[in-house]
Length: 105
Image (cartoon, rainbow, N blue to C red; front, side, top):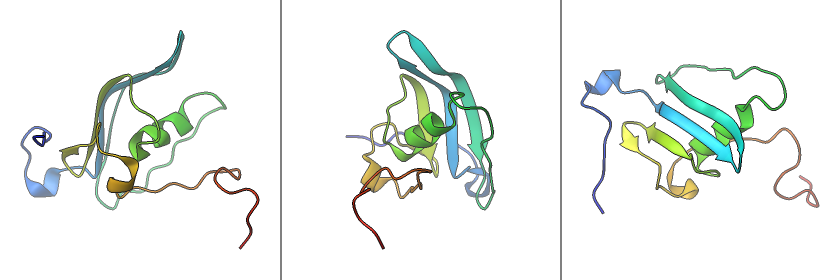
């Protein structure tokens, strides 16, 4: 399997995360439409919006927990659409208990 990279940019110009025309559909419902976004190294980004606007969907697509219906996800300049979640070196924390609600720390 060959590795596809984002269009050539100088090393310092490569965003940590880049979404290119990402669309996500669940059946007939569209959660995201042609979202393009660049997150630069060291940048702090906040996703803000009402319930159902696609914030969690964006994070799940970046983390690899959901597949984009259309578009590309690049992580540090490498196409990540087909990279499994455990190999992406991306993490997220859910607002509510999502993984092991029966456990405590």
